[in-house]
Length: 414
Image (cartoon, rainbow, N blue to C red):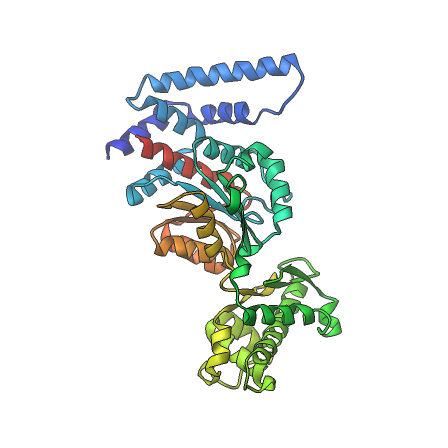
């Protein structure tokens, strides 16, 4: 209660909003070649320090409280206090999805905002490792990460990139473990299935479907995306049809990879297995007139064992995909944390999709962290986040969650 009262007094007695505005200006002031502008920046910096000095002299933990007031709103600070009361730990690594998490096509013009990037550098300077966890290729994510955070930070040895949803992990500055190709651990049967599906997915698609979708992903993550605005009715229609097509294609490939079974039964087995595994998939299959006539228990054990290793994911009006369950974000994150020598993780996981949900669930089940998501995340993700710590933030405003985590760490230092 003493901590609560002190923080309450901090926001009652100090002009915290002005303090934050000054801090943001000093932190984010663009590089300019103007004496007048630089003088203005210096005046703001001097005023910021003067206001912080007042807080430093008013509280026993004044240095910490001055930083808290300059970095976070009252609500953000008390959220951080609640988290610290619940877990009693600081965040010792960030695990961050990129698209629609750190940046948003609908709110930030698909750029990571400057305040978010600056907060990431603040965590870096505080010694908190950063794991970028994305479905994108390594080349893409390295490019915008270096552009946003700088080459020196990315190659500092405390930044890791889990790319292509767990296919590989790239951690610069770690010698032989700098690049880990996790797909090399897959056996031949799984490789054959994905090779077969990828080779057939577009060439053998019905003409109307092939003209309405495009292919994303990698060798072990095959994703159909709509050639329409995500969330629109045409996108919903084509992704529903695409899901049925992928499920059937996968069934044929799995049956062909298992000796002694009838390949013609593969589609029915696949529909039965994945309908039983995911109610959303079952609903789409039923709506498309493709509901299975058999039960998951009717699938031969050898076929079911291979299905057990392959995921089918559905995102309404957004994507239909299959991926290897052995090449996933949780396994990639664990590999990254191992290289970064985070032996007792308590991470902040931020993401919006079902692949991010698996990382969140791992962190929850292992008592290894907390989860946050933007308000437009998938329903499953939002349900998990609301059931744990209710850390939901506005679209494009990842900085608000990073500020909460930053204050959590400041409180833990006291």
